[in-house]
Image (cartoon, rainbow over all chains, first blue to last red; front, top):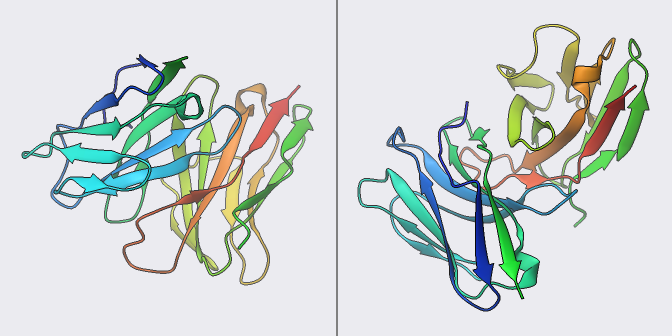
Length: 109
Length: 115
């Protein structure tokens, strides 16, 4: 059963920042927060992960609330290639991922 | 370094037949995970394997489904006596043999259609 809650869909204009929220109020102290995205007819692709501190990489930034009960994936400049379903996932100590239904991001040119 | 490979990419089976889905992990990876994705839904964890061991099969249906990851060769997800409800995309992922592997690398999936 999914342990995260995300909006079903979001829209963004091309080249504008996108903030994708995720609630995980039942997160445990050892759960990592991962984000993956899935393009149509493809397998999920790793985006970013974190535990407590905010994280940045070449694809995105991850902002984690101080109480860790929510997080936000930030795409700094959305492109058409960023249109996908974004999954916020908790990884437990056994390295198992619990996927929710994700947020379908539409990027408007 | 080739990514995770799955074959076949598409598989059609009649009700009652057997389906065998294969997954070759990335080079050097010894952990394999199988997930099932029904249309318009997220991925559901099925089973987690290491070489010659099933670590967690809590997501596997109790009947007709089995998985293995032999010492040599790909991991196999086997579905016996398929039914229409088994139609889905099945994804395999792999990760390195470290205690805290941060990423899972996913294959392109096998789309099973049961007619």
